[in-house]
Image (cartoon, rainbow, N blue to C red):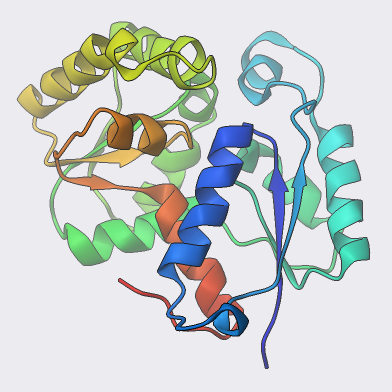
Length: 234
């Protein structure tokens, strides 16, 4: 039975477009009709997730719930979110619907186990994702060794994400921050990187980086493709 995908997007819009593109590219299809039906609600007005977690900013859950209801009404068979930090709210959202949410965090942990067994991952993510222990708890459960960036590296990553990709800045504006973080974590023993904010795979590609990495957006795309009864390219 073929199923459809609902993308709870807008967090941010470019990350949402990146997920949609990766679903299309990673679906093993030879013609238009071989692809998956996808519904996208790209609500860029959803309040910032990191600000909500760290600083008591506006609660994003009501706007996310509105998007969920729209995707339910469209007829989606599963829900995916192209925002790692938003997974902090996934248990609350899942309690509001019978539709399954597919976890980007769990898909990433499985990829780490399969591709880099025994090696140490460096978690590159927003301060909100790191403060909420989202990846740390998931990786611990999967017995994946990891490193967490220090305060200076976290500041640099936030600049890459917010002042770089989200702001539409040219890649050279954030190259030094991104490469400095990766070099420092490599020196601390990281064998590969988890690009744990959906803006970071965009930055990684734009900068032409080649360091070993797991792209959670791509892993979520493949998980959704398989859930819907289609074959995914590796």
